[in-house]
Length: 318
Image (cartoon, rainbow, N blue to C red; front, side):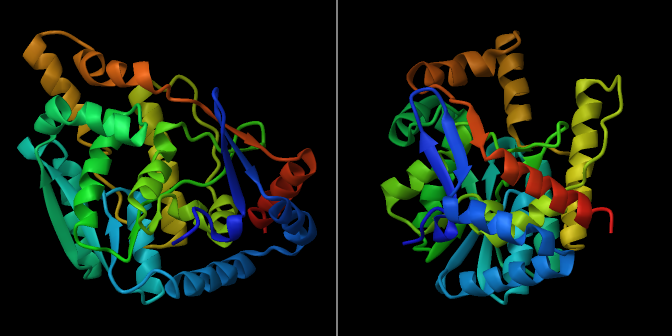
């Protein structure tokens, strides 16, 4: 069975108050030793070597949970590049709640000739009859992630040799410090994996040091314009993400609407009850009473942060 992260290069420690992330001692030393030698061609070469290593372990019945978003698209394109056979599989909510995501997934798979399956989910029935059970089983305070686990369980019925999800990786913030702040809900895939004893990579871009460091060193970093409203800010940050992943692979297909389906679900319940915030009151707050959505904190030595920033600045100014 896979470890959560290749060679345990990345460490996760959950306490009563928070999720604490750090690099292993070996990783810290690697950064301190190698950072001045990093170039973009070198990092890309190492990334490809990591894909070859992955190829030797994922098996012959690989599935990628394709939401239609950029992160899971990137997983698919990496597997294609490594000539790893796989199927993409997408959750289709009833009443077209996640239609933009589904359309994006279909368009992407058609463009890249990817085998694509779909699983229909009656999302309202799930929320009203199964949500609490799934939250308790996977210790998850998020209705959205619980619905993903319901979907993943149905993928497991297909006996995948490995299930891969889109992922996250450390990023450089406005203070030129490296951060990684996934909450309890966002890493609850680890609980799902261990309870189901399945091969699963839940944060693809963080699975390998070589995956993560290429993503880290090629992040698009721009100053966010002043006076943007919430929607404009979200669009600006999404476009930076699009630009970043398209620099890594031109095959990325941006979503016309950056929606997950839960936006429409929230509007649906607000309309039914003629009130605002109904979705959170009915489905999120009861889960949070049992499982706090603990914040994530990233801890790396100061000198490691400085080395990463030096490499980032050097690679992005050449």
